[in-house]
Length: 342
Image (cartoon, rainbow, N blue to C red; front, side, top):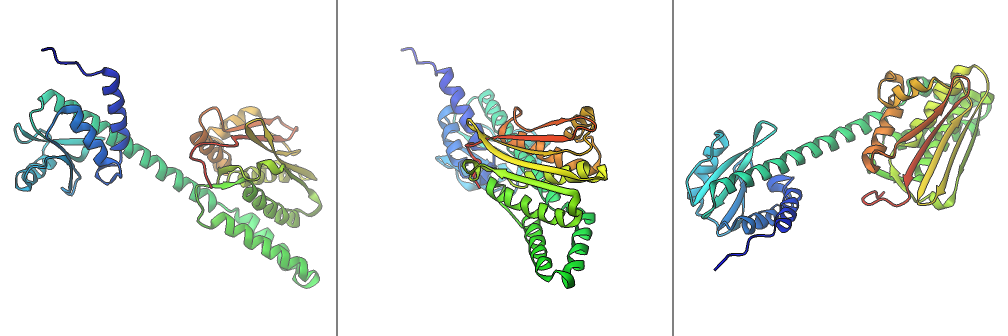
């Protein structure tokens, strides 16, 4: 009797699901489900995965621990598979370093075991890369949140102090604004917030800047009600407004205006930060977005990179500028995006 050959499409789909489920190693919530798929895919009696501490999770008829533990210990210290059929322990390498041990019990061909080990190694490597990328993004966000300009802090507190006697009520309001600003910038937040919260933060920041720059700075903030609840990455707008004042209005030596708008455009939310300051060479703007604009411009590059990471390479910042013509920065994000929740 002819035996039905496995459907390649089904096999590939199973391999793809296994790769996703096993990325986090033995600690992943879906790791046991991945091992069940591997067992069905290979026809093994049991498939196990051990971490670097030797802790093993299994799917199937588990061999006696007295048989598996020595194999795991040996495999963790050697590069070659340990044991013989029907129980084999294969050391896993993740980016050139020990990453655990795959155990296969049952009559499974050696070439099949090698392919399974390669699939598991790939999944673990991908999981480690994604975890590293997440950690780097969080570290970058913490660095951005902590990057409050000492010059701005000094000027804001100096202005507040000068008003304590002459205008105590205004000094109190500005001190509360300063407290709100620092609380939002430095407090621990989720990865995402909503447009309403970001606009509230920049209004506080602009109130402080107006106190510092007095008549030199005019501001207009307008946001459409339909985009207030749109979820966006935390601390996206404040760096754009700060950039408009520090690199647009202040260097001009005269008066200037900053316009901040938020509105719906089809399925997208479009936010613009525009100033009528000194502007810049478009090539410099491109360099800044590429992270090559110097330490004073890391905020724009950070925001652009985070937007592209969250929404895809077709999103990010668009900068319209020219020397003497001011600068306009556009942010376009989907009004509804899977996984983006405040």
